[in-house]
Image (cartoon, rainbow, N blue to C red; front, side, top):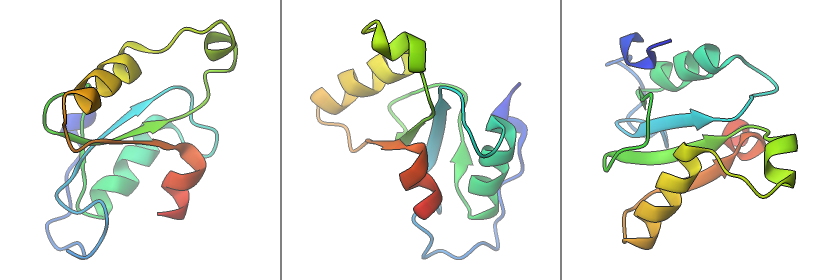
Length: 101
C-alpha cells in the first residue's frame, strides 16, 4: 500500500500540528487501519510517507507486542532513532498521543 497516493488537503487548517509535516506509521494501529490514519493526517494537511527519510517529522508507533518484548524494533523505528541522534527534528509518538493531537 503506497500512502504517498493519498491526496493531501490543501485547504486544511495551517495551524494543525500535522499541516505540511511528513508522517510515517509503524506497527499495528488499534483504532484505524494504517490507510485510514494516513487519510486522517492528509485531511489535516499532513503528508503520509511509506518510509522514514530525512524529511520525516513524525513517526507514529502502533503496537509491536511480541516484537518489542523480545527487544526488537522495526526498521522504521531504528532509522528514526538514528536520525534523531544525528540531530534531525523528528518526533516518535505513540498511537494514543497521535489521536490526542
